[in-house]
Length: 392
Image 1 (cartoon, one colour):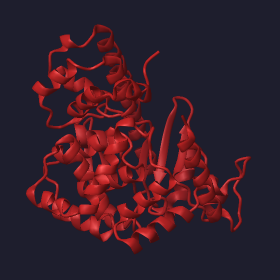
Image 2 (cartoon, rainbow, N blue to C red):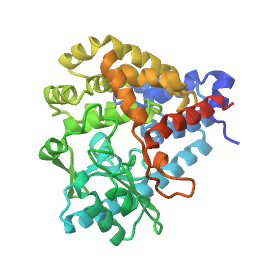
Image 3 (cartoon, rainbow, N blue to C red):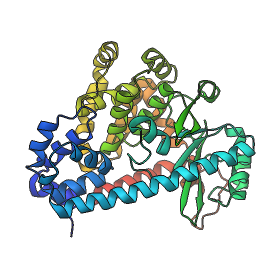
Image 4 (spheres, one colour):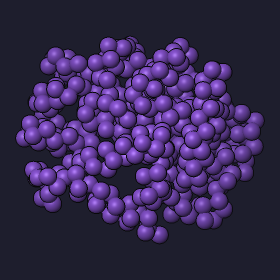
């Protein structure tokens, strides 16, 4: 039975495996050092670690640059099998991306593709170069009911009812599922993006949209600067628990050579996400050696609180979410990530008392309409993260 990350940590601290994984995920990998590290690793542990962190594709690509004879044949076959599965999944998701965009065009809906296929193409130049299990799109909130009806007509099931939408219930995202073939699509709006410190200025984001070329076709996407901020906010939302999140930022800034850093930094300030952007860039630079311009380095180096957050993230990052902070530590992290005591406390309160579908649904899955939704959320979160802390 393959070792888990926790088993491996207890057995040998996975120091060689973690170092090799970091080097393989770096956009500026030192191939001589990587080969040396790969000669020292326990390969089953390294493969498990890469899978848990979502960087199998980066590991596979880095191996091509070194002597493949150092890789045990059975491990090489496992890597190839996983690559084939990832390529097949990416092809299916890309096909569904184009199909969904056509559904939106037919309905006259404005949209932008997020993460998934779009991010893989921009950061790595290959839709199969990163793992993702769904498609994400941004739409205006006032279009969400029309988008829901269009998706249902296209063969999807929705977990949010029309009644919930009309009652102004705001879920974490609008989830759509198609059974055959199995595809998940998530729609986001300026109101579901609750981890944005200030409301997402969707009209400005849409006005700056650009196109990403994929398979000879163009797909609508946020401009690179807005996209970078979004993936850093997404990483902060998930406490940067997996190396893939850091690798995405590192690959993105390394490949997108025409980024307007002035615009990125200014937009982050405008929406209160300056520290979130700083932390994402610090992680990419300090952990994966992503190159940054001098003015950007100067800006993020001045953020002492951001540097301290990076040190904290580095303590739990190797375990891929298995040793996340407890509830109080998470709360402090959220506050510091927003920046400033009053702003941080306000941000934490909003996240704590803004209910999602888990809070306004009853045990039988039906929507509840009462004033207790906001109060149920902190109780649910306390139970959830209390249980996670008690796991062996």
